[in-house]
Amino acid sequence: MPVLVASTKLCGQCLKKTPVFNRCYSAFQYRFPVNHIIHRIKYSQQTALIKPMTASLAEVLRQHYHQEIWPEAIIPVPLHRKRLQQRGYNQALLLAKALNRQLKDKKMVLDKKMVKRIRATEAQQQLKASERLKNIRGAFVCRETGYRHVAIVDDVVTTGETVSELSRVLKKQGVKTIDVWCLVRTPAI
Picture 1 (spheres, rainbow, N blue to C red):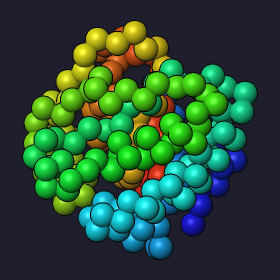
Picture 2 (tube, helix red, strand yellow):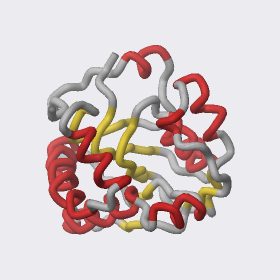
Picture 3 (cartoon, rainbow, N blue to C red):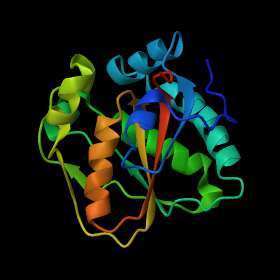
Picture 4 (cartoon, helix red, strand yellow):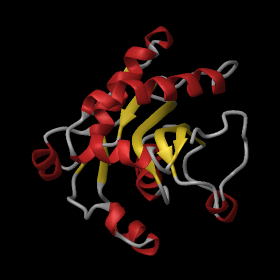
């Protein structure tokens, strides 16, 4: 089910605790059949599904940024080298590349080397919400950047701990505005 583009409601989590990032845009809610499509992209190497999924996200972004300033850079959530070897690809990087092509008129830089995952963490989806922050803390490092506004790209945002930790690291390097772009997020509580 598509997320309502016109909706400006904050989810229950964001109402309880202000997120580190500034905004989060997604094309779909994490429900059937989209959850199965994401699973096929991530674990069954069906990467051909990325292009139509990112086309929907690109449309959502064009509507949201209609009169707003676009980010200077797109930053895919990095995988640790061990997970990259297991999977063979980083789905967030493939999403970011597809979005960058679909939004090429916006002239954003795809920066896949600015952030590195230095710690192999357990898969967040296997953990309880209360364990996710501890799991992801200290997993990323960031080289210096001159960017003031970036977009983090990931496939799924559930509790938001991964994108929050990445946002903390980016803000320490001087990034002022951080938007999160994801294909799906869990429904608002």
